[in-house]
Length: 120
Ligand SMILES: [Cu+2]
Image 1: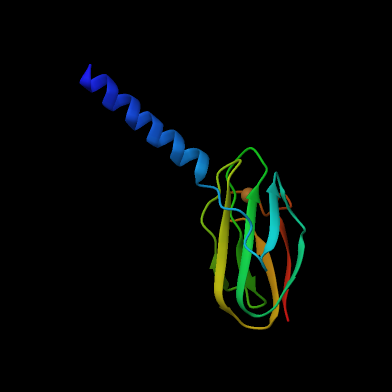
Image 2: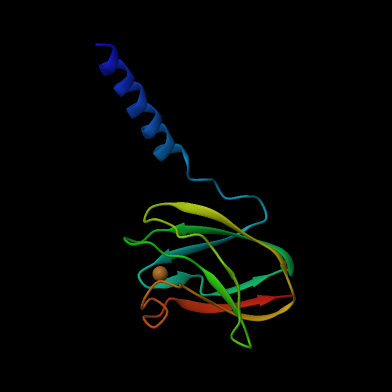
């Protein structure tokens, strides 16, 4: 009986974790919705410096968002976002300039999961 009660408590903890882990959109952040296979919007304009993106995965597979500069260097990459989840992705010190955004998952960029980011 005692083991059964502990099992229930553990299940409740896990359920609480899954249901409550998605953050809400921070003030001043830029929301980007991810689906197969695109970012919406695909053209972002942000203020350089600390850039806060709110990534919402409205698709059915996991996605991320990476930022590449004009030389092809990857300057930042978010955590993977599970289908149905959202995360806050903060880039601490993004210089002003032109960038490309893309999903690093196999085949996603080639399928259209890419866009442009301008830091003013
Ligand atoms: Cu993707």
